[in-house]
Image (cartoon, rainbow, N blue to C red; front, side, top):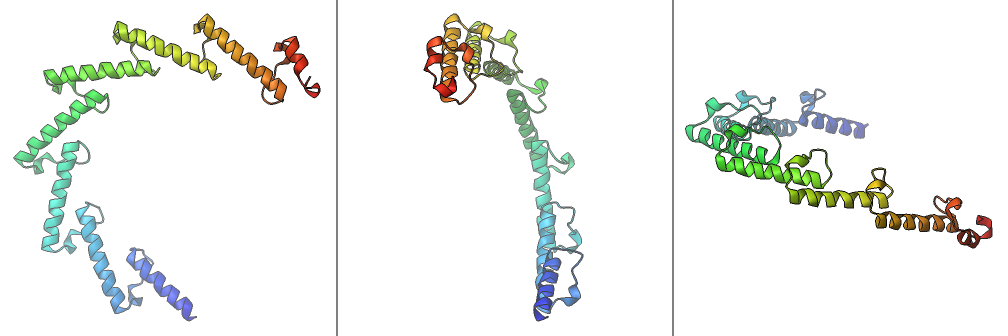
Length: 233
């Protein structure tokens, strides 16, 4: 019975510490109640500094309230610079507003270069426009080289077109060697097609010889067919 009571008391302390409705404060000892009050106060201070909805500003001391206000100001400044969250420009100082404008300009330049986010080309300077155009050209060339959908071949230089055609050919050859469905045998050169056919013939013979893997006996030569173990023929 004593063990059950002790377990119930521990569970109640845990419920109180975690702010659960099952907490019965009347069953706490004085030291437990004091420790809980300290923990609750610390949690409220943390919630206020983090801008949590559970914050109760009326429970803060004057110094804690100032600290919370400063944290909220810095949080708003960060939101304004990153163009996320709830940015309130009216709460920024003149210097902070300038820093925000600079940060957002750089963010826009980055978005334009990376082809991500909300890029506003009209906000770019002449040199930035040139840098963004170069980045866009390089990104398009990379997309084409990797065989990705977001590729505009009309924007490639003659040299890039030649290099990408070579990459396309190597990628197709690899797909054919691996037996992938993307393989286009019509794009293989005669030597490549012959090499693949020879490799497939050897694979088929090995499969028939070892009795492991797909085996098509109709493609074996007479000599190969006769070399198979009696049980495999």
